[in-house]
Structure formats: structure tokens, C-alpha cells
Length: 219
Image (cartoon, rainbow, N blue to C red; front, side, top):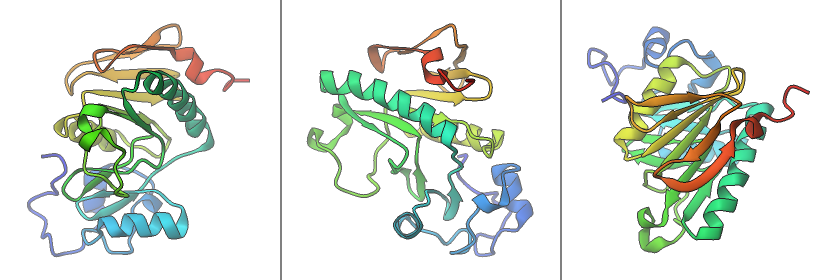
């Protein structure tokens, strides 16, 4: 499984920079939190850092990886969040979460999609979870790719999302002005600004023009 560290490494030993680089790719060093030491962090640390520092960290096998985000990425995520909420709320389909929507999609694995949708069927009694980090896999997960994200990191996330039961993943690339749509780990299509992003089988009838997500960013 993609979230398991190299079996040749001693799990009790603190990983070296080389270990972390092999695991996550050449991401900025500040994104790997060293307190608590890698491999020892828990969900409680994720919440503590968010409450004390207003910083979002994902938890990967006891390693805290800080989310890389910027203003432009937030604008794009906000536009998509608004469009999805208008569609989902009117039809009572489920819940849409934004940039702070922490979810535990597997043991010792907390991910924070920039936008996500979870259907009523996946919610216990159809209600909003009361846990700070609920155990659930969304139907749709969206990642707005930042400059600090690595290819290795995103490949791992794709593996984890589909293993957790996610049915649809959208990777939004602000600098390329494209959206890569994954309906499985092996099946994807890239949409350009002249095309329309749809909800497919997950959100039938949902449509938003790709250019809408990027409108005004070049002005």
C-alpha cells in the first residue's frame, strides 16, 4: 500500500531527510513538521497545530505534512466550493467541505482535500459528523495543485483516495489552466479552459465551465 513506509527502514528510528525525500518527493523542507518527530504524530497533533497556529497538516503514517496553499489556489477552490454547494444543497445530496475539511480515510492517514463532496448515504444517519476528524471517504475529492506539491505526493494521494472508496478526483492545475479528472486510478482525462467540468456519475447534472474557475486570474 502506498502509505506504508519503506519496509527496509527501522520504524523506531527517526527517518532521515533522504528517507523523507524518497517518500514525498522534492517538496520544500518546511512542509515536513519535525515536532513531534516524524512517525510519532497523531490526529491530536493535527488538531493542536490547527487550533494553536491555524496551520493545516495532513497525517501520513505518523508524519505531519503541512498543506501548501496560496491565495490564488484558495480563490479557485472557493469558486468550485460555491458552485458545488449551490448544486448539492438545492438537491439535498449531502455535504461539501472546504479547505479545513479534515478526514481520516484510513488508520494513521488524515487528508484535507481542498474541496470534497460526501453523499448522504455515506453519512451516519445522514447527519453532519460531530468529530473534528471524521472517519469517512468522500465521493469526490479535489486538490488544487500548488507550487510546493510534488508528483510523488499527488500520485500517493490518488492511490489513497481510490483505496478509501473515493469515486471521482479532480486535480486542478492553476498554472496550466487545466483540470485532470480521474474516475479511477488508471482512467483520467484532462480538460482545458474551453471545456466543461461535470459531476459524472457522482453528481449527475453538475456542470461548471473550466474557464469559470480561472476567470480574472490573468488580469
